[in-house]
Length: 346
Image (cartoon, rainbow, N blue to C red; front, side, top):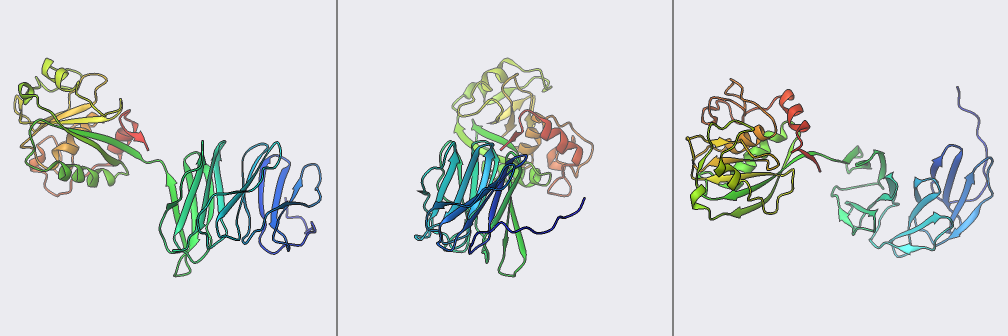
């Protein structure tokens, strides 16, 4: 295998070309011509001639193919907005997608029906717009760019973008799904350590193993008969009638969301208990529990067991005895957490 020589494909253009392949043996090349129109040439069992697709471009074009026979082309127009033209059994007209671009756009597609477009905005930040059953608005992804962006996708829900920074170095930003635990809190008695604090402590510890925590909602419950909650022997898979009754209160929670109930106490007295009815993932936490108990009990919901190590979140010796805060999670625990049906890719 070796590189072949150069061949001229003719034409006369002013900027960098853009190219897309939609299958074996098919290439489509786009350039801005000396007339500032979009020009197109393709290979399929041989090279075509050049065709003009019109428009008045003020940047290089960018192109992506999300499936065989589908091409999406983007460029900056004379109004500095993003303009779009596509091929699907024939060429569309041009449509404006708005924005204020100060660079050429770039585009990637991770699959049929999905296109992500990036450009430098008037504030030199990276701006993003995407198509998925309709066009989104523009969102800022921050940064201070001294170049246009480049973007690529290596699979569904993965996009990598690259730009030049003010230090002339290459900078990288990417989109990927993150293992996430969605937690809802239900309060029968306000805990001694504020809800926002215990959630933040959980976030800090879980982040060390790459698991995100979303605090999705909080609700106050007036259930005085369950405020001193009978948890029996607190063994996962076995629940009392009171646990069954309390854990039925799952307003706003999805089937894989974890609901934590703050009660005055448990009977017998524990800091918390993660035994929950089938199909109702959650835990109860006593009002007097420490700042680490919330994350500890959710860890049990995700399948973690106690360990005899007071440097660890999952110590079986009581979270009040954690000796080197913040406590640790280890790689094997991360594997268990990520494998849990209650850890979602978001």
